[in-house]
Image (cartoon, rainbow, N blue to C red; front, side):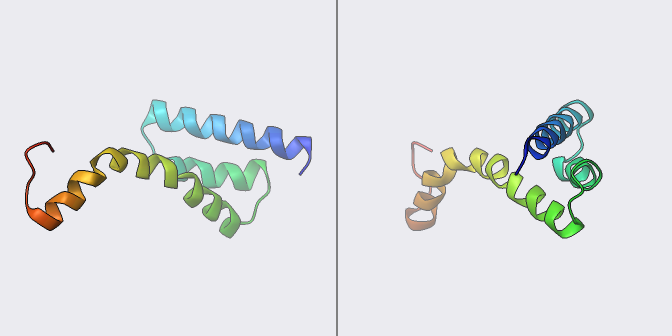
Length: 81
């Protein structure tokens, strides 16, 4: 990995994040074309990178509710959740 790849990745992530935030489009919808056009990645590699990049933002909102969901499955609705 050289400096051009690192800078290209930062530019790609920044543009994808800004487009997602301002336009309300999915990050994968803009990230895959940018990875292909800017960094020259193959389509399958770009889709894999996009999928891995979405794991954290899509799983973090669930994390605080996970203990309540486990409790509800076992014993019914608790008073605290």
